Length: 152
Image 1 (spheres, rainbow, N blue to C red):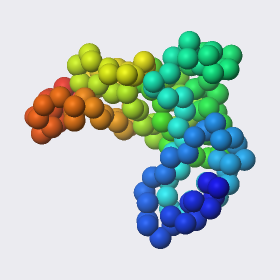
Image 2 (tube, one colour; image 1 turned 120 degrees about the horizontal axis):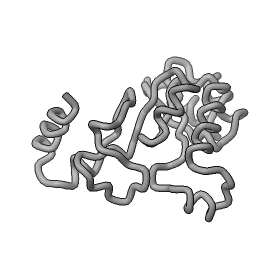
Image 3 (cartoon, rainbow, N blue to C red; image 1 turned 30 degrees about the vertical axis):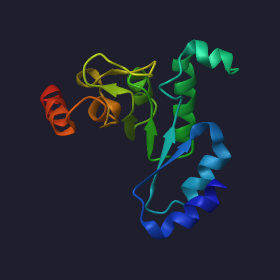
Image 4 (cartoon, one colour; image 1 turned 60 degrees about the horizontal axis):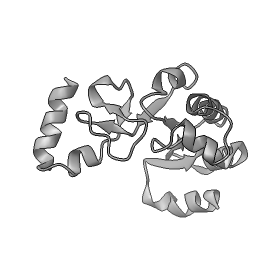
């Protein structure tokens, strides 16, 4: 299914395409093989989950250990980039040497429904994903300007 989707999207000249690392090494390699110029980005454990949540859905590893394991799979599959929370960036960077994209990034301390989020100025990632911290509080343009000040 993933390979068929990538093939169907080729005419759109997409720069980045996300896939869940939990789909397995064979699926990841197959997508990478047909991706062409599109960068394949592996998504690790969602920032809305913590250790308690993982246990409830059947995982025995801690979030950190699971994300490290997922980073190793992404490396083995030769993915182009990886998505992980701010808390795993340092550990992932030791394994995965390509682009790291980090969601769960906040302006200030409000984290909405994310359990593994962090203030933008503390995140050491290649790309930051910031959504509601910009769009949900007042003037979007002003929020972006405030973010730029924080990141300087």
